[in-house]
Image (cartoon, rainbow, N blue to C red; front, side):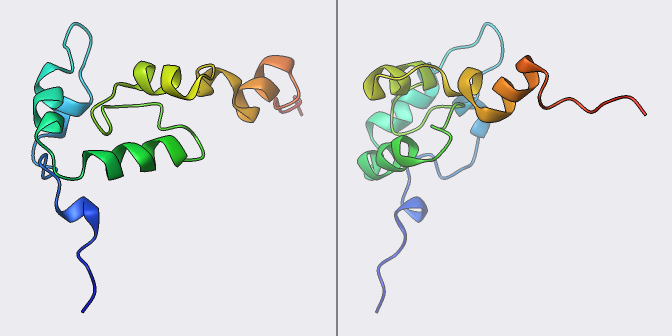
Length: 97
C-alpha cells in the first residue's frame, strides 16, 4: 500500500486559492491561518524552496515569496532569470526581417 501524497493532505484543500495569491491591497492573512494548522506545512515549504524557479508567487508552506527569498538568502529570481537577463541585454530579441 502506497502512502497518500502530501499535497492531498493539505489544510488549504485547494478550495480558494485567491487567499494564496492576493491581489493589490490584499494580504496573506487568511492563507497564513490555514498554513498554521496544516499537517503538511513543512513538506509544502520544502518543495517551494527546492523548486528550480524558487516559487516566486503565492503563499507556500506558511511563507510569502519575500519570506522564502530571505530564508534562502537569494535575490528575487524573477529579476535574475536567464530569460530576463537575455531580454535586457538584447540577446533574446529577434532581429527585424
